[in-house]
Length: 292
Image (spheres, rainbow, N blue to C red):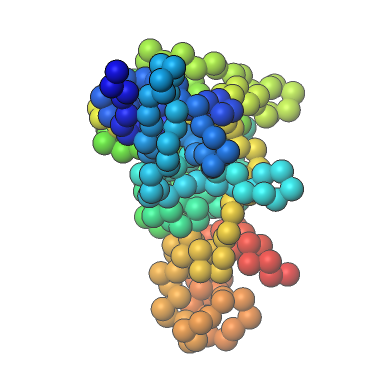
């Protein structure tokens, strides 16, 4: 009897069991060992068939990157791996936490992935402060796309940007990640949650991080809602590079190692004063640097 073996990609993890799409596009369930505790959705792996007819996970193959956040007691928790594009979903309801958006953009930059900001639920009213933020992000070079599950044309525009990439949806709970994913995937069965009218926070309705095939040779990872994203290992260099407008202007500062805090002749501080750099973004930059 010839036992099968091969490579594949983790679609989802259920404790010690891994749902894997093999290179032959067959779906198998493989059991892992203790050494596989760090394997997550999106990882490429090798597997083998056992004499019992079941499957076992053998090894995790080298990663391109991994998206992580601090979990219980500050321990790092990896959410997904081998990502090409981070899609940051914002919406008028619940009101965007722009500090979370900033941090997600830093992480995406650190992972060397593309960033796409969605102004989702664009059919709902948004105040001037929200519109100002979305406009600012466009102005400094980010792509901001308006989407609504009630606007089929906006969904088609989004689908074009997902093609041939592994995409992950991140953002606050209740912004519509799961309903948006269902609209894109059409036949996928994803539990849909509604925003609590009392608290303006959504329920974490997507219980397992899962990778879905897209019709156009791409993948979509649907992840649990993130209320308070705490990125891991945001060192000084990551913060400087992650605020792309600050990084770009740094070359014009008097000192090459300017931190843009108290230094004289700082081009960044001048830009904040004249309004060309968003003051909220700058204050969050200082907050992440832990500057009083």
